[in-house]
Length: 116
Image (cartoon, rainbow, N blue to C red; front, side, top):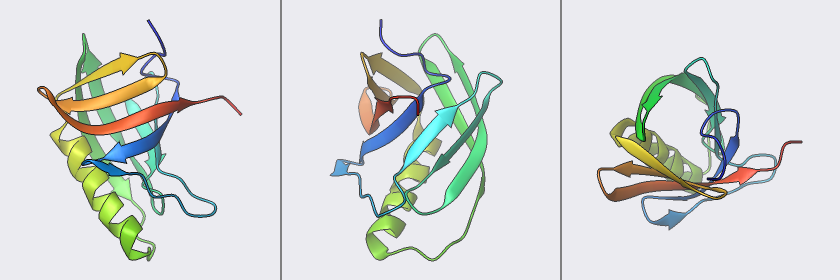
């Protein structure tokens, strides 16, 4: 079993094979609402959009993203995360871990954060 895809705050652990970069005051995360919308952060910029999920299939449609200046490691992470979300076709939840996949290829990994 494990966590639900929706109503869980998923903190980015790894994207494109690289460990997530965190800076003071910001860590990359996504939150999927039951009504098919998501909010989140790339670690620097806020992002929103929509998603469709059913039976393990998952498709994101990134919407707006704020355009703050970010340190280079965060810029690279942001680009990788957005690309990973656009490429996602399915997902897997194992306990507190969420993996975004394109077929069998892992794109990004998240871990559930406890509710504040």
